[in-house]
Structure formats: structure tokens, C-alpha cells
Image 1 (cartoon, rainbow, N blue to C red):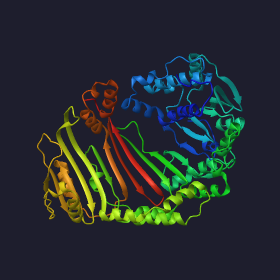
Image 2: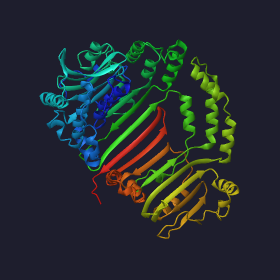
Image 3: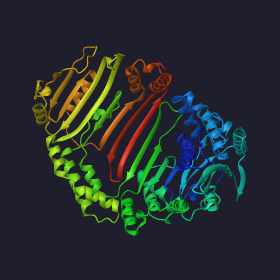
Image 4: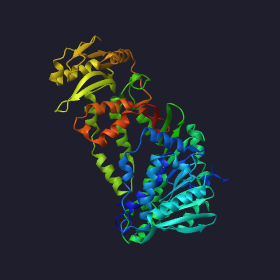
Length: 586
């Protein structure tokens, strides 16, 4: 049973907040004449939303069709309430039970909940309090649904009015003598979910319920427009913004922003000394804010989604902004080489490429250590880190990298695999394998000779260095009698077997050793990958219905992901292209 104790804990507060996030993450017209951004504080640590409505119902229907929840999930919140549960805990239990019914049948979204199918969802934090606002098409139907949950839970939320907004509150419990309430309200044609932490409640609720504007809003700060212009996003782009600078600002002060004020409020109620005392000293605060200036925010953008098309495509960009230009240039210098076929459009099960110029790794690390040693810190823990790093010997790293001098990258691509039964020893019966491994370096021949001198098993293999292919002993038998081959040519070593891999080996052997923009690239066909996993697991595991249901669901999804990580002029960027199509179970 959820929430067994009378005393409300931080963990249960977090759980309550997750309800809000769960609603948001399943998808991502209001009558307001003003922008919702005018009600979002500029110092919010987290913001998620878009200027244009998101196809919430379409996304839920698509998600349910491709990834239906196991039946066991619907049973998670069917237990009867405990006598120790507060009204808020009882309500949450029933709310979540109905929510999982909604996930199982997304048609209920507008027909039973009154929530708009196309929705301008907005999530943000008011200090420590999460706030979710979403559009309603039928306020009365939404009220009826909440009342039905009340009746099912055997509770009745306290009905309140604040300005033009109405809300119900449910007592969740106490946290350090502060009363914590779950708030469900309506402002015009919007529903609002939030948590009242008992800190400056009237003002916080007024902002959350759209009855008052913060002193400085996200709209007036111009942050969203600046992000859109900088990264070429549109009003349809669904944005998530994590403001590391405001988080550090809140942790290192008692009043710099609402986050700081709420943390300090709970500290005062506890009557205990704060674990954040040192962070709040002037010198330490400056140290931490200087770090935050260099790593100010993380931006996540979801774009190009249309759940009515086949396939459904989604582009995601996550970028952690870095303002330390010497660090960025140093990171760029480490970029190495990844073969083109790792991220091309050809069919494959899985591919992975890591491009690192090991010759530049030791100089980069050495320079970072020098820069850190030059800094003057006031924080004791930063001084400790600095002291520990002062004992680091970059010469050892230089020695290690010298042994593998010239390496620029490594890749693995699994084009195709077919397996049969698994032996009692856990070894699969491999019927077919199409696979390639590559190593790229300035002088692969020298690396081979060094490796042979150090490894007796490699020394037994006759490796021609003239670019001709050679056979390699198979580590496991393959039914189709395919041979594992190798080739060393110019800057590349390839170990491969299979028709596609042979072509890829010929391709990489002719490739110039140029730096690739990304230092990591990966592709995965989820259906084929989990089909391979299912075929390879022992027979006794296949008797477990939960394992069978989960893997069967995944292997029958025609879903493909193409992702990469790179260092750009703006910071560390992760890009992902997601594509999913209809696929019938085999």
C-alpha cells in the first residue's frame, strides 16, 4: 500500500510530483488572451512546454498501440486504503488507478476526463513546487471525473476559490511541521495540478493558478525566444529547459530565488544546522556561481512529430550549454574517426562508433589539470578536489596512450544474426552472423606488430600487412560455415564476416582518416535487437510470462533510433532521430 506512515516524507512528495511528470511525458486551446509564459517565473529550475498545442491524444494512442502496458500495472493501485493514509494519499491511490486506465484506453482523455486532445501542455517549477497546466475541452466533465475519484477513494477535497480560479485541496501529510497539500484546480479552460508546500501559499498558489504574475516571468526574460532563434526552433517545438544556474543560485543562498527561500524554510522548521551552510558562504557561493556560469542550462527539444503518419518520426536535440571556450576547443581536439556506415541508411541491427584521437587525449587532460591548479577556490570540497588532482600524474596517461599511439576510433556494426536454441552452458546456436569491427589509426600496421609482440595468441595468426584479407579462427561455430576475415590497409583494421560486412570492410579500407563531427554515433533497430535477445535467452527464461510479454512487445515494434553526441560551439550536444512504423506480430 502506498504511503504507509502518517508522517509525510520527502519521498512521498517526490512520488506525488511524478504524477505530474508522468502526465507530461505521455505526450507532451486555452481561452487565455495572455501567454502562459507570463505566469512562469524566470527563475524556474525546470520548464517544459510549447507555444503551439501538442497532439496529446494522438501520442497516447500511438504509444498504447506500440507499447501497451502489461496487465500487472493496472493492479498496482487496486489495494484498499490503509487507516493510516491521509485523504490525499487515498485520493492519489485512486487517481493513479484511473490514470492507468486512461493509459490503457486513451479515448477516455476527452470523453471521460474532458482534457483537450490537442493540448498546450506546460510544466514548470515554482521553487520546489511542481506545476502542470493543461487545456480542457469540458470543465464540467473534468470536475465530474475528479468527483468520481473522490467518491471512489471515500474522500472529499476541500473546495476553495482564489480570484477567478477554483481548486480542491487534499491533505497529503506533514513535512517538518509544514502541511503539504495536493492541489487540483481550474482557471478558465485550464486544469492545474500542483503541490502546496505550505510556504508563502497564497502567493505561490496565485501564480500556479494563473491569478497573479511573477515579478519576472519567462515571457519578459526573452529566454524562449532567444533559444528558438539560437537553435532555429519553431513555435511547434516542444521545449524542456533545465536551468542549472538558478538551481545553483538556490542552493547557495537563502533568498536569491524562490527555490532558495523554500529550502531555507524547511531548514528552519527542522531546527537543525543546514548541510548547505558552506555553500552559502560568500566565497563558496562565488565559486559555485562561476561554475554555473560556464554550465548555465540544458535544453531538450522535441520536433518534427506527426503521429498520423507512417512511419512516425521524431527529432530530439539535447544540448548542455558550455561557456568555457578553451574547454570546448580542447574537447573538439579529441574528436577522431567513425566509419560512414555506422550511421548510414542501410539496414542493420545495431551499430556503435567511438571517435577519439588518443594522441590529443593526454595533452587535453594535462591542460585541464594545469587550469584547475591555477584556480583559487574558497569551497573546502573544491579545494579537496583540486588537491587530489594536483597529485595526478598525466605522464602515466601519456605512457598508456603512447602504447596505442595514433588510434583515432573504434566501431562495431551488427548487420544480421540468426540464432537457434541455447545450450545448457548459455551458448547460443549461431546460424548466421554478419558483423564488422573496425579500428582506425595513423599506423595500424605498427599497432598490429605491437599487439602481436605482447599477445601470444595474436602472434600465431599470419596477418599480411599488404592489404590482403586473411582468415581468423572463429571464437564460436557458425552454422552457415561463414569465415571470419580480417584486413589491414592504410589507416584501418577491419575484422568481419558476412556479405554486408565484407562490403563495409572494403568501404572503410578506402576511407581517408578525417575527423568526424561526432565523437559517438549509434543506431539500433529495436525490433531486430530484441528479437535477437529473445532468441538468445535460455529456454527457462522463455517460460516467464512477464519476460515473454515484455520482449515480445519490443521485438514486434518496428522502431529505429539514430543518435550521436558531439561537441559544438555551444556545448555538448546529443541528437536522436526516432522512427517507428506499423508492424504486425510474426
